[in-house]
Every structure is written in C-alpha cells, then in structure tokens.
Image (cartoon, rainbow, N blue to C red; front, side):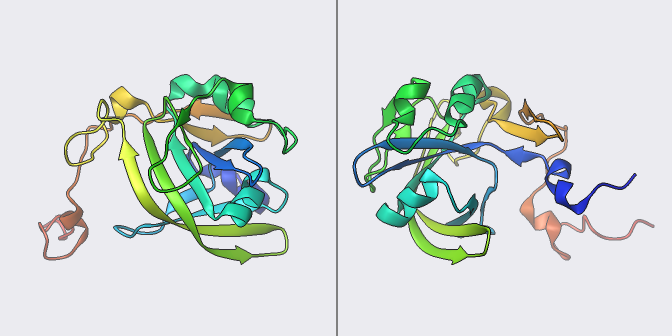
Length: 200
C-alpha cells in the first residue's frame, strides 16, 4: 500500500512535549509539540519545527527563551486544552489548570507535574516559506528524581512519558513499553562487542 508523501507524519511514533514560554507582557503560554528532538548525542542543542503563526514562536523570538516540559500520560487532558488556538492574551496555564515550575536560568516557567524540564535559550532560527526551525541550547536540565536514577536514566514504564501516533483524522496518545532488549552504545561500533559481526 502506498500513502501520499504528505502523510509522512503517520509513519513515525512521535514524542509529546509541552513547550512553555512567556510573552514580553508576562502572559504564559503552553503548547504541545511533537516536531521536536535533541540534535545528535551528546550535544546540548535541540530543534523544533513551528508554523509561522504560533504564539510560541512569537514568544521565543521576542524573549529568546523556552522550556521543554515532558508530560506523563496522566496529563493528556491538560495537553489537549493547551492544543487549542487561544488568542495570545490568554494565559494557557490558567486555562489548563497548570502550575508554574520555577526555572533557574531563564524567565519562562516550566510546568509542574511533568517528568523533566529543559530550560532553553534561542541559538538560531532557520526561516522557510511556511515554517521555521528553532535551534535552542539547553542551559538547565532538571528531572523528577522519582522517575530517574542517579545517572539520569528514566524508568519509562513507571514514568509513562507521553507520545502519540497520528492518523488521517486525529491522533492516539501512547507511551513506551519495554521490548525486553537493551543494548550498550558500544554495540553500534565495529570492534565494540562484536555485536555486528556476521554470523557463521
């Protein structure tokens, strides 16, 4: 079966993050984001893609700051409230019943109840005709220790970070499940643990 190339988002399981910003006037904004990812490993930069008419993008351009909040699946109702196209003068924290998580390095607040908070500053905007790519640098990273070990590894089955799968008429919220297989990073390299050696 073939799909239209414009349906390419339907073949990717996607993360769900809440990106929180604050306007120059002090209005808090929170918006769900799936077009977001760390840039390689183990760098400090992240990238998110945005339509041009988004309050989040306007706030990032004006203040140079944003927070990537990682919500658990239990916050799905708040995420859906934040997905609505409220006018810029509306405080979306209030609309969704969210409480601010005080940031340490930037003015924009995080969101209480999330699993992790990445405070970011704007590094570069790559502008295209219909969208923008925002490259940010993580300047402070905080996690809820109830769901992370001392090395910063998430217990994802306990934490249940929100993700989603998109369809033609809507989306389904999901969360990761252990496949029963783990691998060391060294296994990706020839000469590591010989995991990639051809079988006899």
